[in-house]
Structure formats: structure tokens, C-alpha cells
Length: 253
Image 1 (tube, rainbow, N blue to C red):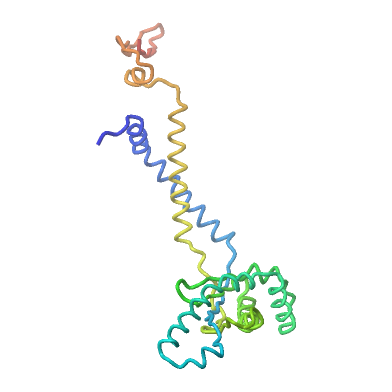
Image 2 (image 1 turned 90 degrees about the vertical axis):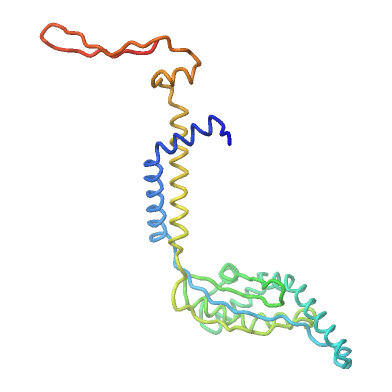
């Protein structure tokens, strides 16, 4: 496989300067570790998992055939899945989050705001099902747990009072209080620092070589300017008065 001359030159240059690359990579790793340890805020999460389901209609209840009942259940499941996006958007509204904040403040004598609730809660649909997971992440374990417990009540009530109660929600996995903070992700962040340091070192080496205009030997002169070297003046010593020797270096011509 033929490699472009410039690419081959860069690869050779990087291999020759491998110590600088490793040094920068280690420095990047240390900086990533230091930043993670000193500037990353610890967080705590509590989550609740819900099942969305469509309500039975009077017509469906009166139809007792097995095939019709199975088709009805499939249709209801598909309807619940399609409606999940709409309900999740309702949960993200300021009005809904203000209701949660008010209920929490009344229950725990706190001062939560709608903005705090909205920024702490994330929603995730379980692909191919009518299940959805709500995760609350804050810098306080009690706060995360309190919000998650309130959502166990507020979300089913919101769905019951919307769209004529055609889709309801039940709690399938209740919230638990976080016993420890989430991992700071040292391995991942240190790996990012290592790679960033190596890339920075490679860029430095390449730019330094491109900006270096000095001539280093016969081959460098021929490669850069295409000028043939007819001969070189060797190094020699001249004896001067006072029994001192001075060395005069030769150059390319």
C-alpha cells in the first residue's frame, strides 16, 4: 500500500517524538483527574417507572370473544405508546412543575420552584413498550427522593385529568432514596484527558515542524528546495596564536 509522502513524513515525525506525545497525554490525564476531583459536583438520583395503559370502553367490555379481546388489547397498547410523547410534553410544562413544587412545599415546608423541579427531572421512554421512566437528579439525596415520591402521585393524576382519562398510568417501580452519590466517572474523564493531551502534542509537533525554516543537512536542503548539493565543506581546526584552537564548521553549498 502506497502512503502519501507527506503522511509518511508526519507519521515518522510523530514516532520520533513519541516521548513528547506520552508526556502530554499523561499531563492531560492528571488535569482531567484534578478537575473531576475538585470541580465536579456530586449528584444523587431517584427514579420511578410507570406503565401507561388505555382504559376499557363499554363496547370493549361487552365483547367477550377471545380474538376481539386480543385485538382490543393490542390496539389499546399501541394507543398508549403513541400518546406517551404527548403526555411527557405535558409533564415538562411550567404549570405542571409549579403544581409539583407547591405540593412539595406544602408537604415538606420547603421552598422549591418550578424551575428547580423542571431542571432536575428527565423522562425516558422504554422502546417498544408503554413503560416510561422518570429520573430525578439533584445535588441533595433528600430533594431527589422527595420530588420522585411526589411524581408517583402527580403523574397518574395528571394523566387521569387529561384527554378524558383515556390513558392512565400506574407505578411499577417506586422511588428509592440514593444511598450514595453517582460516580464521578474518573476512568472516562481521564481517558478523555489522555486522548486530548496526545492530540494536542501531535498538533504541536506537526506545527512546529511546519514552521521550522532552518536547514538541517544535505537531505533537508534537497527535499525542501530541490537544489542539488555539489559538495560540503568539512569541519576543520585553525591554529591561532596563544596556543588556542578554534573550530570552524563547514556548511552546504
